[in-house]
Image (spheres, rainbow, N blue to C red):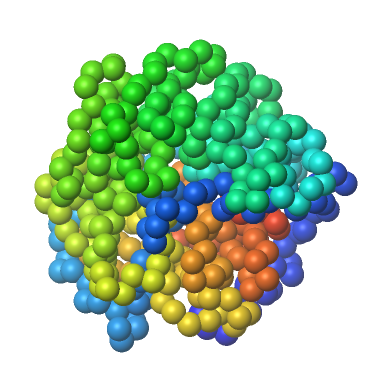
Length: 410
C-alpha cells in the first residue's frame, strides 16, 4: 500500500467520530477465533472473505488474467441500504448505516474473567435476506472457561432490529443459515451429525441426520441451496424433506473448501487449491478466474463475496510484505467476473494467518464494509466505495458488521 493510501487511513481515522463505549463494555471479550476449532491448514467456514495468494494487478508476479469472456448473467440490486448491525465487546448493536446513533440491543452480564466467553456474537450473515430480523449466537450469563477456547454449543436468538426477542433455541456450530425466503433458520443441533431447521417462532420444523460417511472433516456449517430444498455441507447435499442425503462428486464446486452462489443463484464461485473459479450453478462452463500456485499456499480460505449485481467478487488478497504500520499486508481486492481483472482497494492490515476479516457489499453494490486490523491486533470497521474513494472508519473495536437490506428493486 502506498504512503498516500496509508495517510488516507490515518486521516480518516483521525477525522472519524469515536463514540465512548458503554461503561460496562470496557472489558475485552475473548477473541472470536477461540470459538473455532482449527482442523487443518484450510478451514471450510463459508464466511465473508477469501484469502488468495496472488499478486495484485500491475505487480510483475501476478498470474496472467484469463482471456475476457462474455459477461455472466447478472441480477439487479436486491434492495437499498438500511441500518448497520455490529458486534462490540460481547454485545450486538444496531446503528445508522454510517455507525452513528448506535443502540445496544443485547445485554451481556460480564464476569470480568478474561477467558470467559459470555456474550453475543455473529459469524457470517445475521440479517435475514428481507432485512426484517436478526439472528445471533450467545447468552447473557453463560461462558466457557476451558483453556482451549469457548463452547460452540450456544443459544441462537432471533430478534427484530430493535432487539425485541422473537425466539431462541439451543444449537451448536458457528454460522446461522437463513433460508432464501427468510422464513427458516438452519444450524447444527450437534456436531456429531444432526442438523435442525427452525421457524421464526423458534419451533423446530425438521431434524436431519447426516450419515457419518458424509460428515465433512472441517468446521463446516450448513448452507441453503438457492431453491431452499436442500442444505449443503462440503461434499454433501441433505434434502430438507428428509429424503436420503447424497454425496457430491469430488469435482462438484460444492465439494470444494469454499463455494458461494451468485445473488441470482445462476452461477457459483468456488476455491479449489489452484485458485478461484466461476461456473454455472450446475458446475458447467467453469472458468479459472484467479490462478494460484497450489504449492504456494500460505493463506487461509475464508469465503468469497459476490457483488449484488453478480459482476464482481471481493476477497482478501495476501501479496506479501508489511504495511507501513508493521502489520502483514492483507489487501481488499475486487475481481471483475467477466475479465478476471484484479483491482486493489484498501490495506486491511492483520497477520499472515488472520482469518476474522469481514467483507460485505452494500445492497446497491457501490460500497464495501470491511474489517481492518492494525499491528497491535486492534480491529475496526471501515467502508470504501468500489471505485476506491471515500474511505471511512465507522466503528472502533469491532470485528464484525453487516448492513441491512431494505425492500427490493428486482
